[in-house]
Length: 415
Ligand code: ATP
Ligand code: MG
Image 1 (cartoon, rainbow, N blue to C red):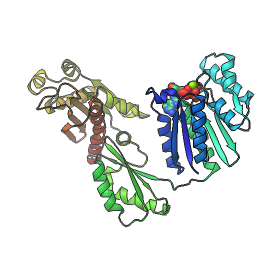
Image 2 (cartoon, rainbow, N blue to C red):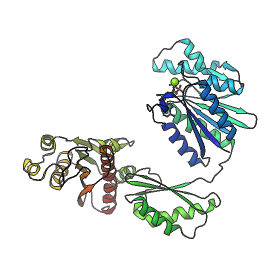
Image 3 (cartoon, rainbow, N blue to C red):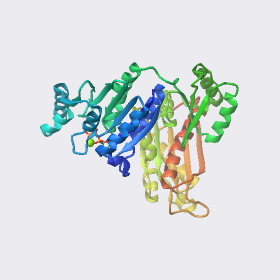
Image 4 (tube, rainbow, N blue to C red):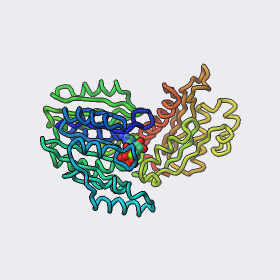
């Protein structure tokens, strides 16, 4: 079946909000083998919503709307879609009770009319519970057959509803149209090198389609085989063998997640000393659930005085070599070990720009220090792009290098 999405909301078109729900849904559907075919993004206007609904239904059996189910006057989806489908709206007492219970738990009161509006359910629609908010999802089976599903916009409500209610139902309604794709993530190798190795590795396997998505530090290789799904096992295995250490375990989405597993497995802890990344590395680390098992803490030492005070970097080293230098980063690493008593450490100092570059140290120069039991590694790196790009690449590279160091020195005793 063909699946379309209609994203509804002025904020998605005027640059206020990034359409992260589309990304989330697209990934989930691709993984489930029912790929999304097209998307419409429209403002909070009845005519625009209706037009998109007609276009989408003309091409697709399954149409999903996102957003505009709330109680405010710009939330029009339920009324416009129900009217267009010819489905009368009725207040569902069970939904009203669930909304009141949710609000009571949160200690919030809202006008009765707001509850009533969100408890309106199109005739014959099924209700998808919303444990994280008020407006439920609405699943409308139509003759044809066709399906229109309305889902709430806030990502904290949308994403759990996709996983808990929408996808399981969709997969029960119909089998996957395409074999599930496989993903192999490769850390620390450029996109074109990954592709060159893929081509060589997969030659002779018929019908395998390969797509790439490059992010700083990690290239995702997506394998699909619409005609020969049985070839996917062999293709994935060949790639994992060819990339060996460079391939992340299937359970890991990022090099940082693999670092977490490696540190936890060996009972090691990590601290970071960050200048140009301003805590970004610590932020990535602490984004991972359970990071308190292995992440000790971070020092954001931006000004030189605080590199001295908090990390024990010597004033002479700073004066002689400058803050962005191998000797300073080496002392930042040493300071972390001394103060945090950690076995693994990351230190970074660089010039993110746009100002501050010199002919010797242009914008994008980053010195990265990594230490693990048995190894201290200092690298003078150069990253392209603007301030944000330099910072993100520095943080991503820190995890790629730390991961590699942990793999290369897996036999060394911990602290
Ligand atoms: P509510 O009850 O909160 O009004 P709703 O279903 O009406 O829910 P919207 O009003 O459309 O949802 O959006 C609520 C919030 O969710 C807004 O902050 C909006 O920016 C965000 N949001 C809506 N759609 C998306 C989307 N596709 N991706 C990311 N965020 C979104
Ligand atoms: Mg709203």
